[in-house]
Image (tube, rainbow, N blue to C red; front, side, top):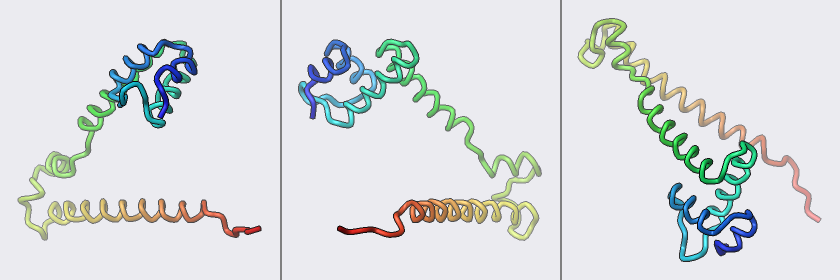
Length: 139
C-alpha cells in the first residue's frame, strides 16, 4: 500500500489528480492509500500519457473510451453460426433434419469449435512447458 501523497510526489502531480484518475477508471482508493496494483496502473498510465504528450486526465479519458469501444465492438462483431448458415443456405439449421447437409454442417461447426478450443489449450500448455528450465542447478 502506498499513500497518495507519496505517489503524487513520485509522479510529480497533485494528489487530487490521482483521486480523479482513480475515480474515472474505477480504481480503488482505501482512505488515503492505494494498492500496489492501482499504483502500477497509474504509473503505467502516466508513462503512456507522457509518451503521447497527453495529460494524465486526457489519457484516462482516452483509456475509458477505448474500453467502451472494445466491449461494444466485441458484441457487435460476434460470429453467429446459426444466422450465417440460415443466410447462406436459406434453411434454419436448428429445424433442419439432422441427416441433411445443413444439419450435418451445423453439427460439424460445434465439433470444429470444440476441436479448435482443444488445440488452443494444448498449444498453451505446451508453450508453458517449453518456457520452463530444462535443468535446475542447486548450489
